[in-house]
Length: 93
Image (cartoon, rainbow, N blue to C red):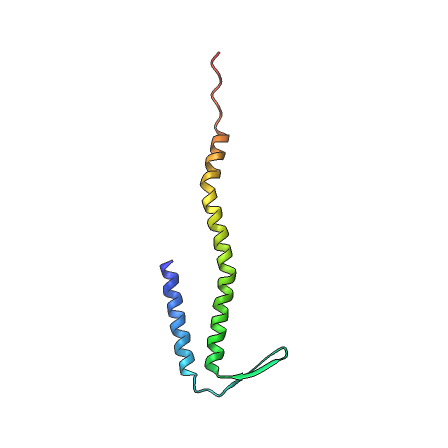
């Protein structure tokens, strides 16, 4: 998990440096369906990276929550199955 944070930190720094270096670029025209607006390249880059991070989190968090619930149920199910699989000793006659 710590490696993930370092990789994320490096990516954020790289995007910030790239955005700052391109802050003097001419404005960018963005068209989406009926919307049309002009903005700085800096805001376009930061907005794209930010929305990508949000989308990734929206898909990643529910999956991780489900897998953590599954992991917490595994030991209990394993104990129940092992109890079911153990043959009982035959009664003494």
